[in-house]
Image (cartoon, rainbow, N blue to C red; front, side, top):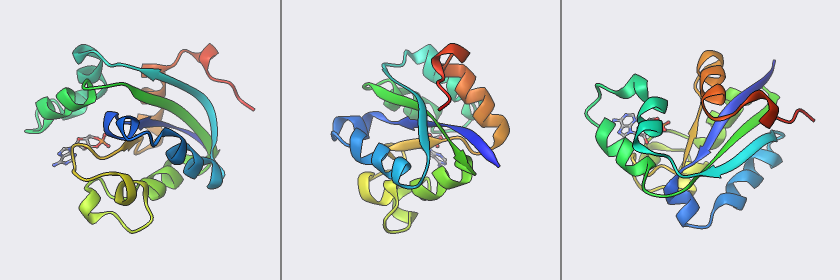
Length: 140
Ligand code: CMP
């Protein structure tokens, strides 16, 4: 199905100057960027985005990392965009990520793992709405 998914280029990948290389992978795989912006998350914004992980032991480190520098949030659109993006990203832990995936190529640790992508249609809807108003999304 034609889907939208939320992608985040995390502070580690922005710091490495890898924004373009990562977006090129999405585009080469047939995904279209229909919204994008660079932002610096507050603790409140990061905690709200990752609310489902609030009770996990890594929550504080996750919020600390995601607020450590600017991120690039994008809406990607295309056929099976959610699964396609997850295939491009590779496993959450870069040490387990398949060769050629974004996390294998740009990430070193499970905390600083270069990218985030929505994991379901429901989370994609919630995550897109968390960062973008409808009039910031440009279907094409
Ligand atoms: P992300 O897809 O952004 O969603 C939550 C993030 O928490 C995840 O990527 C990882 O960067 C981070 N994280 C740290 N430790 C863990 C863990 N044990 N399991 C899952 N995610 C973790």
